[in-house]
Image (cartoon, rainbow, N blue to C red; front, side, top):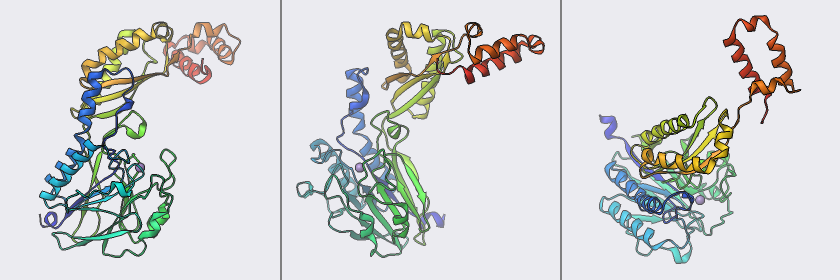
Length: 396
Ligand SMILES: [Mn+2]
């Protein structure tokens, strides 16, 4: 118990993209579902604030791209101010670094921010201290982008920061991950060589926590997924980072704050011989996603895979079939929806036809027909034929 009392926790979030439109719901989703999703998406920031207050965090760090647009959508701005004021009432300091989506331009300086909020400058690293209840002093250092295409290697600027427990707040692309713009480029080695103990990073939407010799560098990922791109799928939220009574940073813990989920879902049709089974498979797979989402609406990109005997049936009535799948799924998905269906299935190989062909597969199958041992063992024979068809059949 004493241990617990001596431990403090701070909240690390990034890439909130508040005010972002939900364009990626596609054309198949109804206006009602779309409007509902947009309304819900605005709750994720409130969840962050609620979590910070109920967990009694020592401070909050927001590592860039708080807003989706440099001009800060006014409604999003009001919601941010409301949340920051609630943290102010709870005595929780907030440290903000701006990123490529919301660079710190002169017009974007928030004169109305409550005084528990520190916005890091863009010309140099700002340094602040927070005294934790356990007596540890944490140094929080950070820098904002001055433009949407920040090219400076900003990790450099942290080299003179000193303190027992340093949090570095930065929007950066560590290692030049190609799926994201290579802004404020940095390398793992640069992070290692800096005096910072916990790098509170932003920019990469995939959550990532890595140990260093001094502590950690971590991307919490975005607060709320926005599409079925793989980096936007799955649970999204924030990291809670414990600091022990010696001022050491313990492994950050993920806590979801998202109000809906985006998921990809693959359904294998290789052993499926009729439509009804396809519906069953789909609803089983969706059920699992809905359960895992803990009553959040789920938006799904469905993919049918496998070499299937019903390929030609599906192809002949694809549009009607896709509509049926979407309608039937709405029961399982409730306020969620299927946003896209990918056709990655292919026709199963017909072994009788194949025996007639002058192909390697045809030749091997004909050879098997004359094998006395296999004639007496139909199960083994079927298994061998199936394996051969997969290995030698190619992309027919
Ligand atoms: Mn960014």
